[in-house]
Image (cartoon, rainbow, N blue to C red; front, side, top):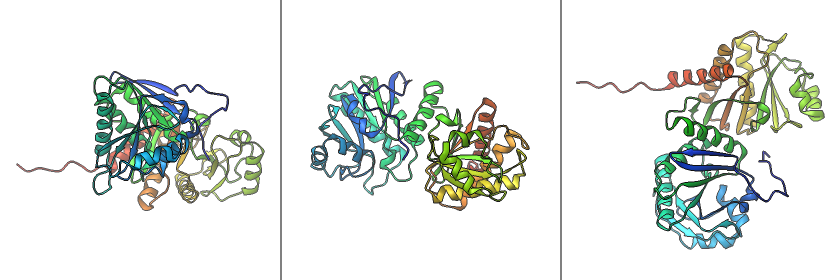
Length: 381
């Protein structure tokens, strides 16, 4: 299981990152749910539905470490909660002084970003009316179906922008490492560029394509894609970094056919699984057909293994195709697959180690957006 880093002796939790959004100080905490009791605030906003049951997602994590029935029974006593309603309860054995349960759903038990933003705004209004100063907001992505952390982060930031003037300090809590990474990308953009459209991500059905720049060794994901040769190249530095377990798995799997893919445990790598894509020959991309075939095979394996987030760095060095050609080929192959299959993959991180690679990935995402977006409706005079 992919977890955030923690240490049993660490009692003081520091924010992963700090941002200034529309004049408000926003601290982001990415931590395991077993450390929720280390965060303090006047109120914690928790997403809920009309029943106020705390049986899944972040709600269950909070219930289990706040005293179980100590918090759930009090919450359920406030049910049914009307759409966009707010219920105030105690926070059990945590350092939060109060819990604000915000109903994100309408009367038909459906939700949308507009409803979520309005529910959060209502909760912030309640906090301001009671004179509370510091408000924590939980990442509620895990409480929804087919939700993506990038969209949750954007919605929460919009609610913070519409806050009452008396609230200036916020803490955002993420108990999932990948969701925390997504929050960092979106909040970093909002802090520097405001609410301009974010060009590095594009949603295709239930999957987010997210271009980013960084090091694959420090980017959380459930599966790492590795472009290699049919022999799986056991001397590759990625294999060496995975230790004995990964070396043995690679030796047992090799060789595979050109244009095919194989999956193995990640060994000592930070990603639990590695997908080996046989798209190279002699250190060069064999052909675009081989690349497309390997990408499709890796997507099928990722779907079957239920890898929610896959990390796709460019091969280094990249030969046989330019970075733009490689990025467009991979992105279009992923797009074609996602339009054909209702995939379990929630996110494809298109990672560039350099500025040029990142721009190539972002250009491929923008090209998909232009190809798949509908033109504006024509009007007649």
